Length: 122
Image (cartoon, rainbow, N blue to C red; front, side):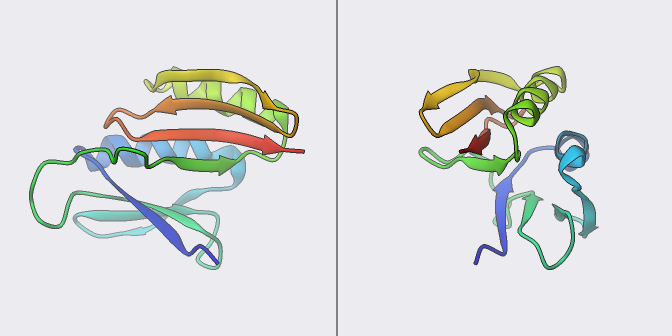
C-alpha cells in the first residue's frame, strides 16, 4: 500500500550517502533522482524513501510526530543498522532493544533531525 515517503533535507549529497549506505544491507540503493529529490529503495515496485530539498524553497524542518520506520527483518539486523546509523553520524534517540514483547527497535535522528527507527516485530 505504501509507495514512498518523502523527507526534507538540507544537503542532498549527504542525505543520499547516509540512507544508501545505511539501507544497503536491506537491498536499497538510489533508484533515480533529479536536482532536488532522490528515491532510495530496493526496486520501483517496493516502498521507497525520497529525500528532497523542500519544494517551496524554505528551510527544511523535521516533522513533530513524524518518524520513518525501517523493517530490518531480524533483531541482529536491527542491531547492525542502528550501529551503522550512529557510525554514519546519526544521533541516538533510544538504543536497539526490546520495547514490548513483540517489538525490538533502535531509534535515531539523521543529520537533518528526521527521526527514524529500525525494527523487527515478532
